[in-house]
Structure formats: C-alpha cells, structure tokens
Image (cartoon, rainbow over all chains, first blue to last red):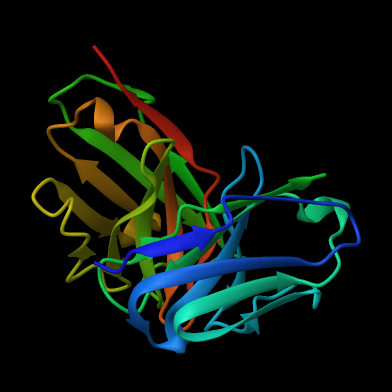
Amino acid sequence: EIVLTQSPGTLSLSPGERATLSCRASQSLSSTYLAWYQQKFGQAPRLLIYGTSSRATGVPDRFSGSGSGTDFTLTISRLEPEDFAVYYCHQYGRSPFTFGPGTRVDIK
Amino acid sequence: QVQLQESGPGLVKPSETLSLTCAVSGYSISSGFHWGWIRQSPGKGLEWIGNMYHTGSSPYYNPSFESRVTISGHTSKNQFSLKLTSVTAADTAVYYCARWGSGWSFESWGQGTLVTVSS
C-alpha cells in the first residue's frame, strides 16, 4: 500500500498570502495518478487537481499542482476567504487507492 | 450534471451488515465510469472501500475490506450499493459514494451519510 504523508498538519495564513502544501508518497508514483481534494466542514471532498497539475472543471487558476516521483505540491497563490479548508492528496494509480491525512489551512 | 445521493440506516448493530444505496441522477451508471465507495472517520481519515465497473461486473476492493464487502449495481434503478458485513465500532464513519474516472479519480461525490455502529 502506498502511504501518503502531508505536511504541515496545519497552516495558519492570512487572506492574500501564498499557501504551499506538501504530499510525500512512500513509493514513487506516476504523476498521472495524483490528485488533490478540498474539504470544508460538513461537505464532501471536492476535486481540485488531477494528474498532478490539471485543474478540475471550475477550479480557479490560483490553485496549481506540481511534483513527480514521491514529492508533490499544491500551491494556492493568493488565499481567498473561501480557501480556508482541509486539503487531501490522493493516489489512484495503484490499488488500494489511498489518501493523505490532510493539511488544514486556517485563518491566522 | 451528475448527482449522487447515499441512503440507508444511520445505526447498525455490531456484527450485523451495513447496507447503503447510492442513487445516481443526471448520468446512467451503465454508460461508463466506475462507481465507488469511500468512508471517512476521525481515526482513519479517508479510506477507499472499493469500486465497480459501469457494467456492474468485476468489482475491485481495498484488501482491507475484501473479506467483508460487496459492491453491486442496479442499472434499472440507476443505483449501486454497498454491503459491509460483521461491522464493529471501527466501521462508524461517514460513507460517500462517488463516480471514478481513470484520468481524474473521484470527481463527483454524494453528500455522505453517517453510519454509527452501536448496540
């Protein structure tokens, strides 16, 4: 099983600041099969990024993904009030599909 | 636009079977994609349980659940279901159904349903 580790656990930032979230895999992944989700309280996860760097439909371009091998990054260029949430990375290239534990982005 | 909605008992007794249904609207489950179940608990986070193909055949499961889980489709009702046997308190979670594509994974989700395992 591929274990995903996310850091930091919590990121405290102000609106307008840049957020950089990290996801590390226990084994090398094909970049085709790494996704990021956003989850707000009481809601289902929402797909933001798939294939490491492709934005899902309707996702603003302030969200970007990058990485390869075992290290992947989600960047939010300028935080908007609606971006404060929990973010999960997810690999779907090898069964069992797995999710990271999440990074909470909260308001400083 | 596809919409998914989970339904089923919110309370299940230990050792019994958890049964949930996902009703899909806006897309026929037999037309394509895979259809899956994910759960979320404070202790274990998000866990993929398993998927089924749009044909309803050859479901594939997380080995952690394989001995206890069945995912099947009901194309006439445009629904698919989850059965998890011999539940314990550790199976208490919010259960989500979702549509899965090989390029983008789980891209549409239901709102989730809380299932509590307790006597």
